[in-house]
Structures are given as structure tokens and as C-alpha cells.
Length: 291
Length: 283
Image (cartoon, rainbow over all chains, first blue to last red; front, side):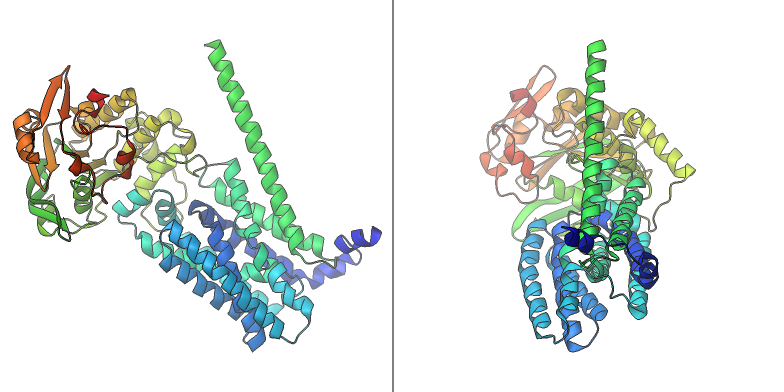
């Protein structure tokens, strides 16, 4: 039991580890911002399943990049962008989109597993791409992650208003001349980039915990277009950085920590929302009784 | 002054002709109802005016210029879809999208913007619920916000696509009176697509009735008559006026089907073949 506990939580030599893993913590914080922001649109556009699908192709790309020596980041980005573009172009209607994703996803996983099986390196690194890894963020990789996240955040800031309009009120947006189709493609590309980064930190299987759960939790708490992205970013960053800090000394991958924190935040948000609606109902009943 | 002018306008999808030779002028402050069976091309007419659909023949002009997409001088109230609970917008945000949702950038909150939205909310009587999440508002409240949104660009022409559908009678009256008041105050031309003319019968100046690829334009008294509609449908139609309402009976069933461009919701409505100007009167 004690062994199990120390495998999950081990804070000996914590100070030294923090210094060593500075890069990872930094990467986690930056990904929290990009992921939390794009998650708002993933929810608005109802694309949670697409996130999962793209992340499997991103995994395939990263594995191929590892096997062929082209680089994991490059591979993940290429895989992500191909998947995002395919889903964006072929899947304009929700039903088409889901079937295209369902077709792409196992194919991507299969390719990824093939590449990993052929890769001669250590197996712990291999699983990192599926379930997340913490030690692997070296300086050049951190640089790449920062640049990609910056592109995503700036890109989102530029298209923010028309993208909200096109996502939530498509008919009127199109009547107003908002180029919904072009915005949709831009969004898919930014989503692909974010996923390519996420895959390298939380792993392909658990990307949803960064790109969907925080935004979903935020939406439980507020409908304000200012507070939803703010809370979503806070939740994603807390999950990622908190997860990395907890995972530091442990011998298990980072992702269970991240996913658990993110899940708990969601549960708490639901409880708060439920409490609020109960209070509101009671108030309505009370005023009706008085009236 | 003429806001909208269609001259010799025709629209066909392949071999299916929706309407042809349509001449329509809408003046400032004029309220025109567009009636007709499902599939008669009512919604397509709005799409032409919004620049989303090309005419097969003829021309369409807004304030003397050829129509182009995304013209801010057109306000648009889309067919009502109730916002789902959990939609991340408050009432005022829906109106705000009409103000500057088409512009690039994150749209930081500003005082000028807030005042603009407040003024619009006030003008449609939505100040009381502007801060509530859209998904918690009733159909009537959401439709008030839609009117406010459509006015955000200071339009000259208002296009309304079945704005009263799924509202109860009281809210139908409130929303149509709201649109009527705004067109008088702002001297808007209004093109109002509806399957039931009765809620707006006392407000409309003219009626455009589309059927069988043909059309009639005139005041309600001129168009909503048995002999006019019988000729238009090429089949006997009875127009009954009773208690201030108009009921049209006997519209051929065929005009309900073959439909890809109008609204699927209608198909689910429990109405009879006397669908049109008096559906409410039959119920």
C-alpha cells in the first residue's frame, strides 16, 4: 500500500525536481491558456468528438515523426493539420462530420501503434504519446510549443468576434456577411495546432481533458462571453500545472493527475450550478406563493 | 422612397421554377407580408435579397444599388430557433453580435458599446431580461432580442422569416406590434414572411402571395379573395373572412410537398390543407 502511495505521490527532492522540470511547468501553463481559449469554441461548435479524432491522427503523426526521425513535434503538427483540414472540409454537416471522424480515428490510432511498434527505443517514451509525459520537454521542444500556442492565441483573438457570431448565430452571421466557411477552416487549423501541442503533454487519449472539460465546467457557471473564456483558461491551467506539480516525483505518467483535477473542477462546477438553480427555483416558488 | 426593388426577377432550381417576372417595390415605412405555401419560394426570396442566392433572371436593388451579401442596411430576423439551455450568451450578447459581431478582434467591452446595446434593449422592451442567459428566456423574450439585434445596424429594410412561429397568440401580437412600431419610428421597409397573415393583418400595407410559380401583389383586400387565389392556384379556393380573421380553405395538397427550401418545421405542424392565411382560424 505504501509502495503504491509513494508511486503516486512522492515529494522528496521536490525543489530540485521543480528546477529540472521548469520547462514542463511552463509548457503546461502556456498550453492551459491556448487550450482553455479554444475549448470555448469547441463547446460552442459542438466539436468534442472532432477533438478526439484529430488527437488520434496527431498521435499517428507524432509516432511516424519519432520512427522516421523527423521529430515528434513536426509529426504531431502535420498529423493534426491533415485531420483538422479533412474534418473541416468534408464535415460541414454535423452528421457527416461524426462519421468522418469515426472513420479517421481508428485509422490514425492503428498507424500510430504500428510506428511505435517498429520504433526501437524505450517503451516508456513510446507510451508517452498516448498517455502523456512530463520529462520530455527539452528547450527546442519548449520553444516550438510556445510558438504554436502563441499562434493559436493570437489567431483566436483576431477572429474571436466573428467566430462567436458564426458559431452561435450562424444564420444572422451569414446574412451580415461574416465568412462562416473561411472562419470554420481557420478555427479547424488553430484547433489542430492546439491538439498537436496537447498530445505531447497529456497524450492523445486524454486531450479532451484540456480542450473540453475546462470549457464545459466554465459554461456550467456562467453565460457571460467574458467569464466563460477566463474561467476556462483558469481551469485548464490549474489542471495542467497542478497535474505536473503533483506528478513530479511520482513514477506514473502525468495524465491521470491532469485529468483528475480537470474532472474534479467539472464536478464542482456542476454542483455549484445545481445549487444555484435550486435556490432560483425556491425563490420563484416563494414569490409565487407571496403573489 | 424605394428601399427595395425587384424587376423581372425569376428564380428556378434546375427545372423547378419558384417564381418568375416578379416586380416588387418596397417603400420606406412600408410593411409587406409574403405569403404562400411551403416550397413557393418565400425563404428563397429573402435569400436573394440577402445576396445569398442569385436570381435566374431580372435584377434586385437595395436603395438603388445592386444587392450584395452582408449589407448592413438590411436587418434580418431568422426563422425562430429557440436557443438551447446552456448557450453561452446572455440576451444582451445576442444584441451585441448584431452591433459589431462581424468585426475582427476580440471585442473588448467598452462603455460606448454597452450604451448602444442598452439603447437597443430598451427600444424593444428587453431591458428587464437582457442580462439573463439566452437559454433561460421564453420564445417571446428571445424574439424581442432578435428584433433588437436586427435593428443594431440601423437598417433601412427589415427581413423577417416567420418571426412568430412557435409563439403563443399573446406573444405573436406583442412581437408583431413591436416590429410594426419600429418600422414606423425608423421608417423601415419590412418584408415579413409568414404562413399566417392574421397576427399582422391590421398592420400590413400590401401582400405578396406566391403560388405555383406565379404571384399576386396588392393590399390584403385585393389579394386575399376567393377569385384571386383560385386563379393563382388554378383550383377553387375559398377565402373566408370571419371575426377580423382571414381563413383560406382548399389550397391544393400538392403545394405542400416537393420542398427543400422552406421550413421543415411546417411539415410537422398539425395543420390541415387549409394551411395559409388562416391556419389559426381553423384551429
